[in-house]
Image (tube, rainbow, N blue to C red):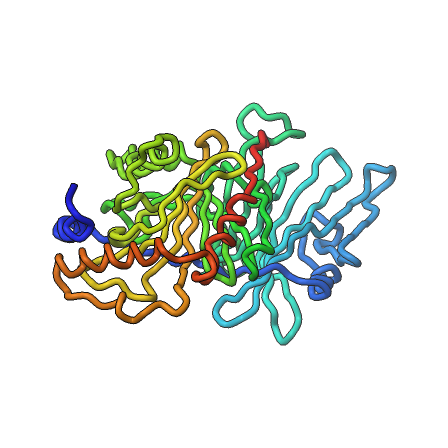
Length: 402
């Protein structure tokens, strides 16, 4: 087996760099009592009497004729989300309404804060008896709606098709951009957020495909769940089969090879933990260090954990290069869980961060740093490895039919 440094050199000679992607994340939940502002606004709604509804405590009702079926009802649904766009506060929400018949419709609204007051700026119909499961605001005025809509043959009462639908704000319209299939919604992922000690959020990330010229700057991925801590993505949960198939359709075996190696390391007693280890999504560089590797059991699955780094060149390992990595499989290998968290060593000697900048020097440093990390205790790391292990062990992915 060639050394990690030699593997790195061979890799760099043929490297096609995939630029790392920072997910656009501008959405935050509206806390109480700020949410009350949206419960008492006037919203345009062409199906309503007079073309508007005036919500009071989140509800509106009007008689449209004689009989119990001649009543118009509307209600604001939660969650309401806010964000920023072009330096202005914006918000997104959904209102459910019925016109007296069997229909129960959903309408998406985009609002802008003008001089301290929220004003509906654009809106679009989501459909009849759809189930809204997620709402998010991305950069550039893009709204993401996760919902269960009707597949061919579904009765109106019971939609089963999970999708993420993207809308772009243009003038006073919400224009549909694309619809992507979804396997998981954020409310299907359960964990103990307090373990990570921060603002922990889950969001739905719609599928990102290949470009016509090969790889786009962002490595392609299927629709999945991302977890952010204090605004930074640290975990992703991918549907494994869709992830593999997406790349195989382009005759690229990268994801299949990576997932198969994760399986071998999890299930084989004589697993090979030598770097480079598989890291998903594909990173712009090569993993040349894998210290403290081990198998970590989950509630319904397992994965490999290690401390390492990813590099694009023959540079020395520095104190800011280290990350805790977990790559695992859950729910009978149905989902890939990727967790990446920056980690530091308390009071590490300066001597371990220096090396001669050649293959032999880097190879020696990789060995020395790996042995030093292996000798440390849990309390020597920030954050502690046990904290991340407890968080990962708390994850429970709930499979639902709809």
